[in-house]
Length: 146
Image (cartoon, rainbow, N blue to C red; front, side, top):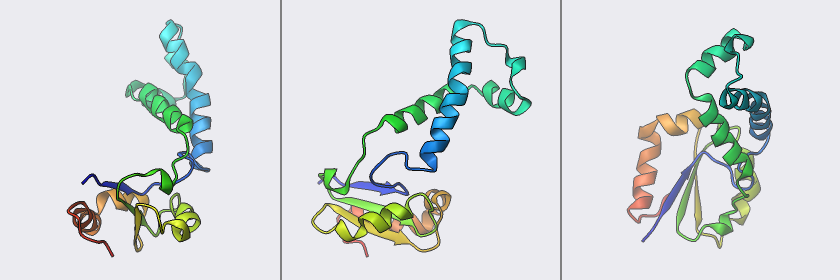
């Protein structure tokens, strides 16, 4: 049986505010720089010291491409998921908890099971393995998650 675990993200828009606004602003800032680089007209000395340091890592074009893909991604609703899905969200995840509050009462009748991890931020959802992995493994192996 196929199963899915999603951690620390919101349903609905892939880029809800304030993240969506942040992504749009970053894309607007860096798109002209990327275009200038591609056309061979970029003068890196015109960038601030901080921006130049980030540009020189080589990650700016990839980051902007990823953000653009997220901004263009259609909304995903719990009813869209066709396989059993465990939705893990830390109660201190400021980006995903509004979605939990919006969707929690409507999860019955969908394939989504919600597991809220007390006190975890988004970063901790991804780094506090001892608190997150047990629920994931139980679910992936077919057991009910409480």
